[in-house]
Length: 408
Image (cartoon, rainbow, N blue to C red):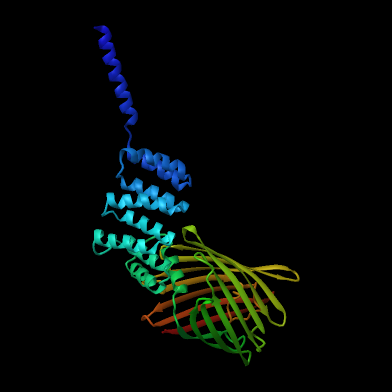
């Protein structure tokens, strides 16, 4: 009898131990798997996730995590298997559709993405959650329907939708969409009696081609030093892929206060977390040639764009530096903003100031731009600078600039 009781006791204890080993908190496993996957340890993270899915096969957040991990690796077919399971298990859960649309967009499976988007609209109802509306805009971006993608993104911006990199995404769409325009600007510079005021007028036209991206032709006429001159320029912003584009500039003038030949080139690259960097070169052919190497780092944070630029100017005596810090706050739409800029030296891309004063100059500048209607934009800037002409002579300058643009 004692042997039988002992046998039953052993069986009971063994069954409890086995049950304890199989019991776990799926939320805890989800947290462990997410940490590993976000650290780039996809296989290790999936092993933990699969353990949870064996017992909880319809746990949507775990299915989504596994699906996203495969998508981040570029294994889009495997990703689709788990994301399909996720939206079947939870047909009213927006996160599943969001991840599925990302995966199919990256894979170039646009017809299947359209089908998933239709299911999202049917199951989630109206109004569509903002995150799905954003993914619909992104889908149109990948399909190169930039106008529709921009329209949908602008609607979200007006609703104050928050997503890391969202403002950078809209700025990229602005560069890609076909946006023909003509515009004019006027700059007035006073030097408080030290020299006569400068009056500068500029007109430009903008279009877009597949080869050049945005293409801008600009003519600038300026009255300064009791003389006048005209500068002709052409700018282009060709695309270099999904995350990069270039800036190209060429121009020239016969006036002594403009460069006889100017040339510029920069490459811009979008980094994760809404960061952007660029590096470039400027050639300014005055009576003496000026070479400028320029680079900047920028960050989109909420409705703000922040940028730090540094310029290196080598000459016979060494290498000079100039730079500026700029901030913009966007409101209403992604084309309406206030801006502030603090700088030393003169920017290599400015034409209304004396290009000989690159180093010992200090400036503050405020700006405002607003798209009044879908076709008409106004903008204005004012700035104050103090330029060191020699060790004991300074020149103060107040600049007022205003412009209009019409789109068609």
